[in-house]
Length: 167
Image (cartoon, rainbow, N blue to C red):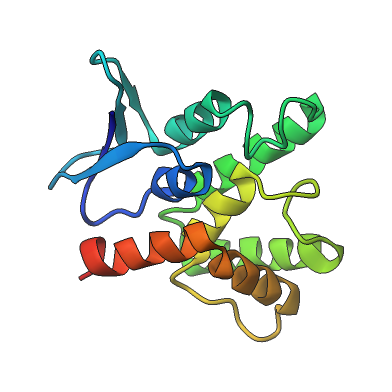
């Protein structure tokens, strides 16, 4: 079985992605670990939260990338939002506010950030924003956050975070 390890003070999107994809991985919290690491059976390792998310999606027949039939533009959009989520992990409040405003506009007529089904973009952005609710003047982002939080895998992720990481 694979082992997903990360610092106790961090909340990697790979943990939520593993729940959504039902990717079998033991979880280890390691104090002072710089970045998330996925150790595969046989000893090979993949480093970096975003790289681990992409690996898991590819391993599960492009799940969370819209499946194998998704076009290159949609896959690139998913990667763009995935990168935005990682780039905003340590962003200041003004940068996060701009991202929230952008997402609210994007989600005005959409259920998901890219395409018509849950993607890596949704999961990574939700993990980024899960612990800072959007202000009331962003109703589309609020609706999306509520939907994302209600998914069984998201509920399991939040329970793990509250019990193991944040406390």
